[in-house]
Amino acid sequence: QVVKSKTKFTPTKEDYQKVYNRIADLLDENGEYDDGSYGPVLVRLAWHSSGTYDKNDNTGGSNYATMRFDPEALHAANNGLNIARTIMEKVKKEFDWISYGDLWTLAGVVAIQEMQGPKIPWRAGRIDGFAKDATPDGRLPDATQGSDHLRNIFYRMGFNDQEIVALSGAHALGRCHTDRSGFEGPWTFSPTTFTNDYFKLLFDEKWVWKKWNGPKQLEDKKTKSLMMLPTDYVLTQDKSFKKFAKAYADNQEVFFQDFSKAFSKLLELGVPQSQFVSTEPWELKTTDEQQR
Ligand code: CCH
Image 1 (tube, rainbow, N blue to C red):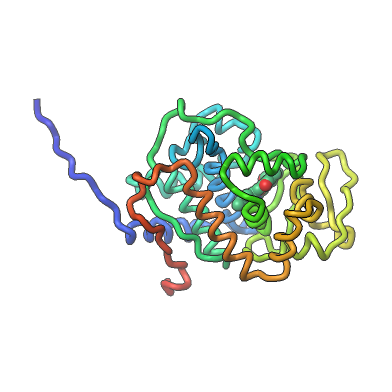
Image 2 (cartoon, protein in one colour):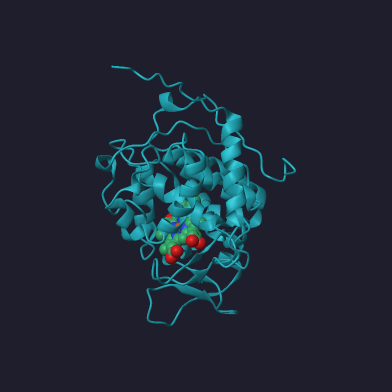
């Protein structure tokens, strides 16, 4: 019997930069989609694929990309993320050597950086797992709940109050969809640009309960065009959360720094250190920096 020898391709940082660039090109390929960018839904994919982590038994997290499998793909919290996964399939076809966990977390990095956000240190090393590695339902936050719930969920991942607030600032991006979560509308006036507007608006606008048949959400009294989830609003009500939210409203640079650290940490949850291809995370270049 002939044993075929296969030379193993070992991708370098430059190869991952190529994947970065391909994802960047896909972000606004469909002007009809939402606010004209797949960026926000890709950030949500990166977050939901990582936020299943449980530090108590070291299960979940971004390592095995278990959202590829039912029932995790069908968890209500993941409604709509099939759109993001389908777009990523295009990239996977071209760069078949990348693991899904690396691809999805890298897409989150690309989206944040290309939408004018901070640099997100990232490194490769996640491996594809199996359906048996999928996590049970209920590990991601429920938007109808309060500060106790937020703490239960995020402390389980290993985050503290400051990191919870920083991560929540991602809601500067994107919107809620009635056919995905039941909620409706964007948090900010610029849902495809990463800013600290989410925190500014939380404090500057008057938020009132929206009168409608849908789930409980708030709307800004002035324009009625923006929304906040109950879990967003508690960041201004809980004393410890409020301190950080105010600091981020007052200073975008501080928010950017803290978000970058927390998001980078989120994307590495559940990945054994020994699997990473480098000891230090990389900073990949934005398309602007490469003058492409
Ligand atoms: Fe979120 N988020 N998120 N979120 N989220 C939703 C959409 C986005 C909660 C609930 C919702 C984070 C934290 C929380 C994004 C990033 C992050 C939606 C609407 C709900 C509901 C989904 C829909 O209908 O399409 C709750 C509760 C929490 C508790 O903390 C964190 C952390 C991050 C990232 C760091 C992004 C981006 C979106 C927009 C997605 C889109 O398609 O536009």
